[in-house]
Amino acid sequence: MERPSNQILAIFGASGDLAKRKLMPSLFGLFSRGFMPEKFAVVGVSRTKFDDESFRKYAGENIKTFLKGKELNAEMLESFLSRVFYLCIDTCNENSYLQLRGKFIDVREKTGVADNILFDLATPPDMYSIIPRALKNAGLNKSQEGGFRRIIVEKPFGSDLESSQNINSELLKIFEENEILRIDHYLGKETVQNILVLRFANGIFESLWNRNFIDSVEIRASETLGVENRGGYYDGAGALRDMVQNHLLQLMAFVAMEAPATFDSESIRDEIAKVLRSLKPFSDSDIRKNAIRAQYSGYAQEKGVAKNSSTETYAALKLFIENWRWGGVPFYIITGKEMPEKTSEILIRFKAPPQKLFKGQCCGSSCNSLAIRIYPDESISLMFGLKVPGAGFEVRQVDMDFDYKSISPTRLPDAYERLLLDAMLGDNTLFARNDSQSYSWKFVEPILNYWRREGRKNLHIYEKGTLPPVFEELRESNLCKINPVHIESGK
Ligand code: BG6
Image 1 (tube, protein in one colour):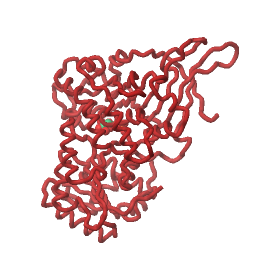
Image 2 (cartoon, rainbow, N blue to C red):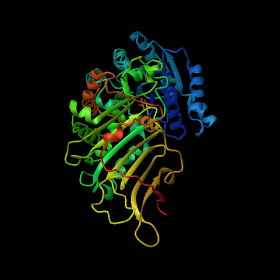
Image 3 (cartoon, rainbow, N blue to C red):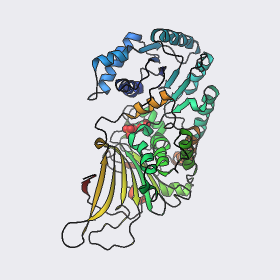
Image 4 (cartoon, rainbow, N blue to C red):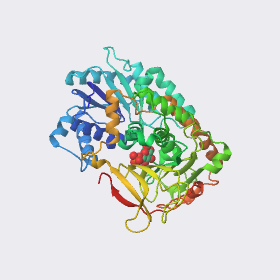
């Protein structure tokens, strides 16, 4: 595996939740596995009063907390933290960026790192134009020494088409498109990347991967947690903006895309953009029929949530991709908080055989399916019918499983580890491109507007830990109950 070149990682919002839970533990995870550059420095930037030493202590404690149970070597941690620095500034005040410039010079002297900087904006989105502009005015957005600049932007990337385009056009005045890395942590998940390999490194699936053989595709991400302490953000977002516009539509694009001409980032991102551009727009009557929203009971009493909030904590869509491969195949996208279980999976349902010849034979489109599981286990399983041993021809549904643990006994890297490594390497394949962001916003915007107009009218309320009953109404396909037997692959 290639190692990134020497660089500084400048994390804005370094004392915030994301840096604490994901960024610092992931950087340490990369360091322990030997994937960090030979020379690097992490510079935390935020308003909270820390200096280098106290920030190291704070970061060390968080790494221990969030890497619990995973590899943690005290000496290694010490060595990582010796490369961590901190600058306390008011990031809204442009004058303070001269201090940041000074800090970079100082850190480079201490660590011998070249003039390469990866900025990570782990901040509220209202900083996405303020920080880049201040970086530009301080001359920090370009290297004077032939080094590189890159910038990672976390979601939410705007709240509608217009705001996301405004953020983009501001960013594009300061950085080039290939320097902007819009992170979507779902694309850092191993199983998601494996969709490309499963489809394009095998001859068996791709020939069936179209409207002639596939009945429907279901992409589901349910969570048992509610909005926790993020009510303020979530109430302005809702499930459609929080999960569908980005994570789930990107997953859908991986499932639906054509094979790229070559395996390079632009060819892959071209294919992703084409899928999102081909989404059939929802008319008002499509929304009434094919878009369901619901809210868990008690949501409006959560901290930070408006008392009469109509924000959806559950959304289910039945959508169509209008192209030759997928014309007429429904894609179900379902996500919700406070659900009975936490699962993320993609289910490809194949069409049923035309005849029912055997006793016990499964009858519907759920009988032959391919499940690509992202959570709880990263695994893939194929479901089909086999003969029960003994006399007669009785059929039993079985599933053939592939579990990642069987290919690699070590833990799978966290999605952020993979994406931060790619960002350091300058590989933007797994980051959302400007155009695909806009196509997804274009698709979800009419639904958002319609729901806003409706307010609480037609908003379903569901009890925590239950599924909103409405979804089965949306899915009219012929599903039948099955009772799978487990077969280990390769046995
Ligand atoms: C985030 C959303 O992007 O993804 C959260 O903002 C959600 O609301 C989270 O809980 C889900 O991620 P995962 O990896 O736990 O499925």
